[in-house]
Length: 202
Image 1 (tube, helix red, strand yellow):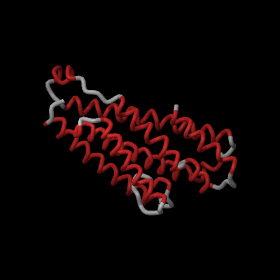
Image 2: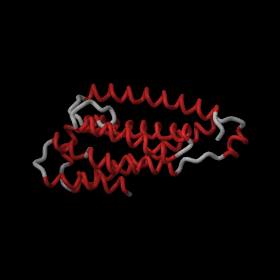
Image 3: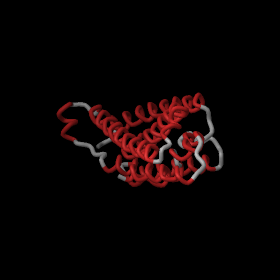
Image 4: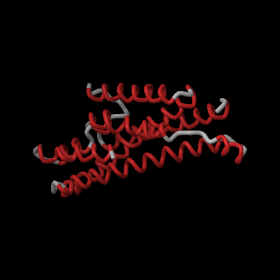
């Protein structure tokens, strides 16, 4: 619900500006609302549903099932929230009669949307890894949100931030390169989380 509200708030400002494809992209990805609303909601939803069922480990005789459950849950939450965000964005664009801009900007919007949700997935992966490492969801949330805050600060200071570069003036090629970097970081954290789950008492 919060995800939908944020996308609608961002879209409602479409009426208030002289519209252009560039303005449309900026308005679809409101960095402040994403930082203050979307990311905390995403992290809280993820951490609230993260739990280990010891009976699954006993049934499958392997801790890899925990890794698979975590990745499944992370993917599911990301897909649901990205879907809600997309519906809200397209709804407001259509209502405000700015749908015709998509013909010129659809690929740029797609690249930036993938960049946004890859960044969210990476933050979620960091939060989950910290949850298993520190055995504290609070610590995991505070550290992962602090990383988001630092990245947001860098973005507002016009310094490359990786996590919030979806709202920058970077070209599509540069953003695709940054998405590749984030995917690599995700794989690293998956490996770290797997090692932690395999070695620590759950």
